[in-house]
Image 1 (cartoon, rainbow, N blue to C red):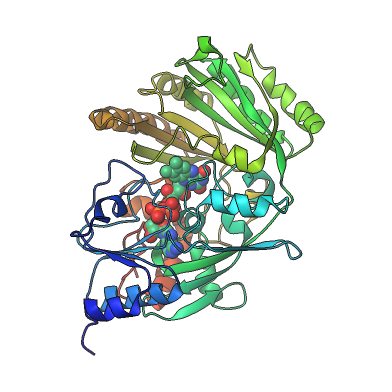
Image 2 (image 1 turned 120 degrees about the vertical axis):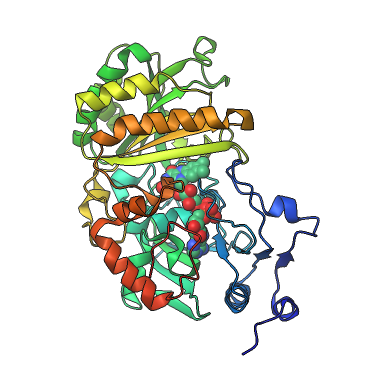
Length: 456
Ligand SMILES: Cc1cc2nc3c(=O)[nH]c(=O)nc-3n(C[C@H](O)[C@H](O)[C@H](O)COP(=O)(O)OP(=O)(O)OC[C@H]3O[C@@H](n4cnc5c(N)ncnc54)[C@H](O)[C@@H]3O)c2cc1C
């Protein structure tokens, strides 16, 4: 068969085909991380599954390096590539809620704000992340850690089924009954196995939540962390609160005397009633003398989008992450040392609690492996100014290196940069060889390799 020509693709394609000569090219090639500056040959902005099939066939016939772009939020820039093809899903955005079955079918170009909007109308939500602009595609396929993790598990723990286009252009469904090996692999294995065109998720009754921060001065950070490591183990699962070192933004919602001050804090999101939240979080919120303590009712979609205005697209972004099964006194000392040296206003470090529902899934039940972790630590260097790229990267690496010896090892593929094959294998541990076999079955030529790559 002769390779499909560009004209043949054009005649089969309903969406936009954007090339370097087109006016839309420079905005279409941008991804979230301002450090990433890649120039693909062609961006195939699909509008339906037929477009995805055509794009995959074109990429394969012409042996193009092919990236899949969902929300474009990947830190390492894995939603794009140089000199190749980008299959851009961002215009495939349908959502259908089934309120009776408590499920939602989400097309792959949606971001989490789209899903929250649709499901909140029915008083429901599915576990997602901490920002509403992140893509459903990448976040889900890597695992999905967020405000509802302790109570309802990772995003993949609520995934019921996916539709996919495979490397050979075939369209398949994967769920516990059909192509169950593939379904296991996509729950944590990233975009290695094909282009997911839609996701079906289980919904939970989440509507209003109790949300807000407690901030403490840096001098109390060690006491707060020591209290937090115990508190979060015993807290009811409707309590979610991630720990952070942060610089208080100069926003009207914070008292002026705290503006631009480096503090530590916990950001709460609790699905219990106001009274339950108050009683359950009181032991932590009364540690030391907080600088600020404000937890109140908020609709879940508002919570999900609270930080969107701070973390806008185009910022310089460098991050590193690790899993922790415990937080030793020595680890706490290193946190206080490096957390006190946050280099720019938007840089931050978060400890996301992973205990509760996410831990009740076995380490071999999904490709995502680190089920015994108590925390996922993510250190994020962020700044609008490219001149600060080196400073934020260095702070992040130094911090990570200081904490890594205290970690449980491994990694979380969604919080990785280009960190090499060892880190990828470490993320999947004994699941890696099974993933490699599934990769070999569904993508033997490694056509989908712009990702944290599992080699066939
Ligand atoms: C501001 C910000 C906040 C974040 N918050 C969280 C959080 O709270 N919790 C969390 O777990 N993670 C979070 N992340 C990390 C996020 O999960 C990853 O960066 C993820 O890769 C982003 O997915 P995306 O679709 O937006 O990215 P993209 O860059 O579009 O894609 C990322 C990867 O996923 C693959 N992919 C995307 N869509 C598809 C598809 N339809 N089919 C097959 N492969 C696909 C791509 O090939 C690529 O390898 C956050 C990231 C940012 C930048």
